[in-house]
Amino acid sequence: MTESELFDEEPDDTHEAIMQATYRALCAHGYADLTIQRIGDEFAKSKSLLYHHYEDKDALLVEFLDFMLENYTETLPRIDHDDAWAELQAVLEYVFSPAADREDDFIVAMVELRAQAAHDETFRAAFTRSDQFIHDQITAIIQSGIDEGVFADVDPNQIAALILMTFTGATTHRSTTEDTDVLTDVHTELQQYLDTRLRRQADQ
Amino acid sequence: MTESELFDEEPDDTHEAIMQATYRALCAHGYADLTIQRIGDEFAKSKSLLYHHYEDKDALLVEFLDFMLENYTETLPRIDHDDAWAELQAVLEYVFSPAADREDDFIVAMVELRAQAAHDETFRAAFTRSDQFIHDQITAIIQSGIDEGVFADVDPNQIAALILMTFTGATTHRSTTEDTDVLTDVHTELQQYLDTRLRRQADQ
Image (cartoon, rainbow over all chains, first blue to last red; front, top):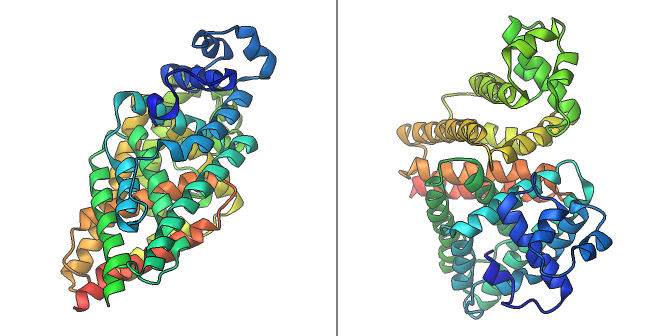
């Protein structure tokens, strides 16, 4: 997600201003070098507000993850909700299309944040919520296609699980390897697979 | 990979003994709390050997990643190389079947190591090599099925890319969320997809 997708030009309130400062500091410094001090440097108001509210950077970051989750749907591209296939394509496009430079920094930061979840249960709970949310969103799109009669009568949860796993894989792959061409192959194959599994099987 | 899959009971030489000590220390302490000192605690020989050979823990860990890559094929389950479908199933089983406790610690450590690749190009190069290797292995299995006439005439690289992405996703998902049930769905869906894409389309 880019900054302009996630935030209004002028933050509505102090909380949003803190979240925006966190976003900027995270993109600029990455997780390991992030400090409350550096988030404060991106924050126009008093830094003591930050020290007062948050015990440490991890407490602030978990709140940041929840903020992103709440605002996630607003960042999605505008799509035609009456066309399940177009909607699914738009979500795929959003994940697999080359990211802007600024967004690259953000994806790197998210991969580093996610690794914290491997040994920190608060982070793990936040990523569980976030993955569950994406899983539910994809399931709902597939279910609407089934209801409209344009998709085959599949188990939408199971297909959504596979799509979610390619998203998690692609995000990790993009920032931890030099070979990003492979993501074009994944995108193409995923489209063909979904076309066969959802649309051609519906025609039979 | 479990310790017994990766190492002989008695290490062949000092290098293997260092790699085994690294494996044990990584499982016990995770990446963040790992030190050369702690690797030394798992090492029967002189600790000064470690300090002499390695500048810091990251230098040792990059060598460890390459060691694992070289020994990766030996850890794979014994399979029938004349049956491409059985071979593909065995690889899927290896990735998606529930891991032993000890292996869980190792997967956690690998996810943490991989996050280092987001800001360290030496780690990034190591994970690029390792992903490329897995990608090539899967491509070769699919190609052999095409050559035998049991798989449809598909682009094996493209399908291998999608499978690789689910592996990266699953490894990350397993250690960074609480919801591991979803991996059963991914495994089942991946099997159905490959059955349709490789085998049923070959019958047509």
